[in-house]
Structure formats: C-alpha cells, structure tokens
Amino acid sequence: MKFGVVVFPGTWSDRDCGWVIDQVVGAELQYLWHKDTVLKGCDCVILPGGFAYGDYLRTGAIARFAPLMEEIGEFADRGGLVWGICNGFQILCEAGLLPGALIRNASLEFRCEWTNLTVERTDLAYTSQCAEREVIRVPISHGEGSYFAEPAALSRLEQNGQVVFRYCDAGGRVVPGANPNGSLHNIAGIINKRGNVLGMMPHPERCAEAELGGADGLKLFKSVAGNAVRVLAS
Amino acid sequence: MIVTPKPVVNDPQGLTVKQGLATLGFREVEDVRVGKYIEVSLEAENMSEARERVEAMCKQLLANHVIEDFRFEIDHEGQHREGQHRR
Image 1 (cartoon, each protein chain N blue to C red):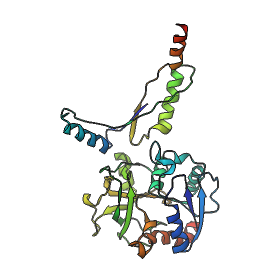
Image 2: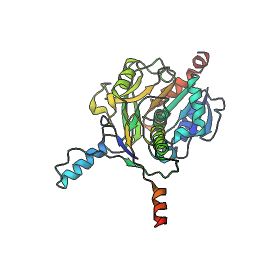
Image 3: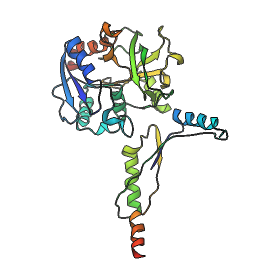
Image 4: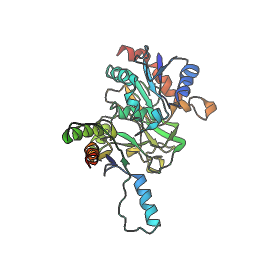
C-alpha cells in the first residue's frame, strides 16, 4: 500500500500524515507536490489539512486548479482512494468530488479541541477496522468546518448512507451540544456514492499514538493500509 | 461583483454584525448579510460580451453556487476615458 500525501503552498498537516504513514503504520509514503502531474503509483492520495493557497477567495477555491488536482479527479473516477482531511475536505467539495460546502463555524471561532465521532459506515476502505457505531475521539482544528448542503442534496446523502462520521457525545448520542461548528445533521465526514472519496473535518493524523492523547485515528490509517488487497482487487 | 451567502445559508458573521449594530442603538436593523465585493477590469468588444464573461467568472470561480448568490454591474471605463480625452 502506497500512500501519497499532497503538499500545496500553505498545507500544514502533510508531515503529520507522513509521520503516521511512515513511522506508525509502516506503509510506503510518497509526498506529491501540487505542481506534479502524476500520482507516482500511489494507491491512496491524502489531501491534508492547512490553508492551501492561503484559503484565498474561499477555502479550497484556488487549490482545485492545481495541476495535480486534474489527475486526482481522474484517479477518483477510476475508483482510487482519495482522502481529504480538514482543508482537504474543503478542496474536495470545491472540486466537486464531494457534495456540499464547508462554511464559517457558527461560533465564528477557530475551534481546536477534541470531538467524539460516531462511525456510521464500517464497510469502507477507511473504516473497516472500526466497530459498528463505534465512538472514536478525534480532534478538530478549523475555522470553517460547518458542513452545508442544500436540503435536496442533504437528504440524498442521508438516503444513500453517505454520512460516515457525525459529531456526538461520549455516549454516542448525536446531540446539538456535541456539534462544535454548526454542521447540518452534525456531519463531520462524508463519502461519495461509490465509496472511494472520503472528506472529514477532524484530524485522525493527530491522534494516532497514545503519546498524543489518543490513538483512535490510527484505526483509519490501518484500515486503508489493510484494505490494499481488497481495493486493488475490486 | 457582489457575492452574498444564500438566504438558506446560516451567516454567523451577519448575525454578529447585527448584534453589534443593535448594541450601538441601531435596533431597526432586521437582517444583516456579509458578503464580498470583487472588482475586475477586462477588455470586451461590447456590453453583452462583457456580461457573458463576467457571469461565467462568477459561476466558475468567484461564487460557490452551493452557498452563494452573485450579482454584478459593469462600467464603461474605456469609453468614459475616451470621452474625457475629447473634452
């Protein structure tokens, strides 16, 4: 399993992702520069957190024009694994690879804190090591993470079971008090219909070792690494 | 171009500005929406071409149709300058 980690000017979580892949999971790691035009044989491409192109105009609005993004779009069309984390999720929405948009947090504050997430899909390459309805603890770190989609798009997401993670309390209850940013339906992460493009606001790469206060994020990386055979065979 | 959050989109900035205005005594304010103002200079053969190009810019990049509406006005900067020359 070879992971590609995309680096835009302004990306800040690339090395954290790289550390988890390389040092914690022990999988093959390839950094990809935004001006690259090939994915160098990567099986899963991660768009990490940060402020690509300074988040100018809107978050992710300029990053989607990076030369590598065209290749990533084609890779996703072929069924390749594309995983957007935080800013990466915003970029995937702007690029049209995922529906909806991320807007300013309802509190107007930049929120950097631990959240509880209920895992609603465990049949995906990203979550196969999670238990059904498991609650995982993963930190967020964003100012614009409030998920919005028009009512019709939102009900399509729900009907298709495309919501993968929802903010919840420690007991797994999806309640307004557990929603850190005003996301509709407490949405923290969604998958495309085909099941290969994942976008999530929380940062699993920041909780992949017990030394960092929690290792729930490691389950997602290990799921992807462990699913290599299945993904390539499908 | 003026880009504003769609009416169905929650606008926490607008709400906060509204509260600020109320604190200053502007209690008659019923709603505030905070958007963006973007100025673009371009060359075009005529108004309809300019209009078409600007609309395409808004749709493809300057506004995100999921969350934002846009509107725009076009000034004849070049013609205006020509007019000044003649005087």
